Amino acid sequence: MPSLGADMESGTLVEWRVKPGDRVRRGDIVALIDTDKAEVEVEIFVDGVVEELLVAPGAKLPVGTILARIREPAGAAASTPIGVAKPVPPPPPAAAPAKAAPPLPAPTGPRLRASPLARRVAAELGVDLASVRGTGEGGAITRADVEGARASAASTSAPPAPALRGTPEGDAARAAERALAMRRTIAAAMARSKREIPHYYLATRIDLGPALRWMEAENLRRPVTERLLPAALLVKATALALREVPELNGSFASGAFVPSESIHVGVAVALRPAGLVAPALHHADRLSLGELMAALRDLVRRARAGVLRSSELSDATVTVTNLGDQGVDTVFAVIHPPQVAIVGFGRVREEPWAEAGVVGARPTVTVTLAGDHRASDGHRGGLFLSAMGRLLRSPEAL
Image 1 (spheres, rainbow, N blue to C red):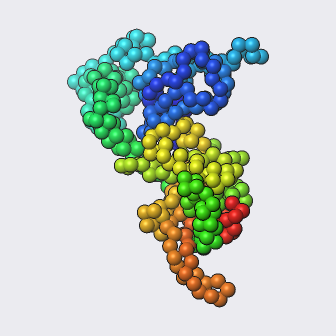
Image 2 (image 1 turned 45 degrees about the horizontal axis):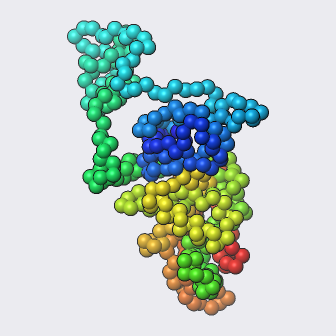
């Protein structure tokens, strides 16, 4: 089960797109995974032959669970499983009783032995302690025993009827459930970010006059379907500025900053009716403005349709968020871990601007940066914002 972001703990296998014996190449879609945010097409990152599918569709599994075995094609120098140390059997059916070891004797006497935490958890989950077999010292009931009993009861109870999927009632219920799960996931990730990441914030105003004039002239030479929007210029300027300040492009893991050689800009996309995802525009610094605009349109369309690839949800090295279309002037965003920076754009508005002693009205945008003090500091963040301003004053170089 792939990790599609630091806020993902588990996923549900919806369907396999391959079968044993199929040859796969890097980048092929092999499965569809349902997460709290979207249904995601899972890509394979090795070449080989599907040897065995270990998990059946419908299983909800934690991140890191092995789903399948893939071997190198016949005739290759090595024939060991790729990425798999040893076969892992699929989880047993939920209804099958455990027979691995004889049960420990249940506690006797007028009062059940249970830790205070176990009693509190049992009350919260609605578990009757008298029905729980303790595995602690002397048969005492622990928190794990309570949670295990609750999971066992849930697995043996009747699950939601899969036939509802695809019906108006089922789709509405599923959308409401996903929206609630997504909001919990986002809240958990943002709480972790504010708790663990020492944020610093910077902001600057940038004159977009040169960029917008160039864009208007450029759009006159393009077909209507290929015309540029200001968002393309802002994302491209962000990507190029990161080349100059690489401390803002990467992740913080195992107590150290890990810079990324590639610049994959995550673009925050608001979902309807609620929610947020930030899929990545891969190699945004290498794309022409036309290519970037096309990729951005496609990414937003597929994000709102719930059809994203696993690499798009897991590869972002920095995120940008633009709330200008909502009338917001300034965005102070929260870093999405394990990334170390996020860039915010407000609306483009005309403001007084003094240059060479002359005051006039100019279209401006407020650009903000939230940086992780463990990877960079205000000086480097200031250089990034200065680079953004310089690049947008020379849009033909983008």
